[in-house]
Image (cartoon, rainbow, N blue to C red; front, top):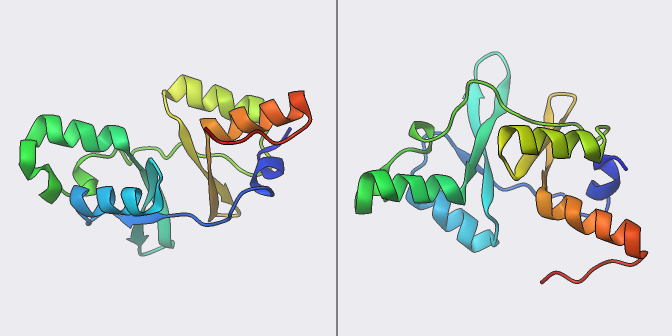
Length: 142
């Protein structure tokens, strides 16, 4: 099974946050969209608008633990590592994506095809697809 097989059944909407936004804004975006991770984007002169990292609920918790109530004013850029974005393509296998997630201790991967952000795939998406393949019918979200 390929990442693209899962993406065809998913809404193509990707929620992003800019590096210079605050934890408070990021948390509101996650809450409003009922999601647990955002793709972090930045404007890079040579590449335009580009994905540089992921911001997750874990990052919110870490910010609060380190900065207390003032965490809402901390910039997203202060909390993410942009050294190397871990991502996949729609032609990658689910086995490869699971390996990347396990090795990097992450649950969400941006899907980038031809240098363009096309989606985000989560461990939950993979689990649901595997369940559907094994059971032959879509599983209801819990």
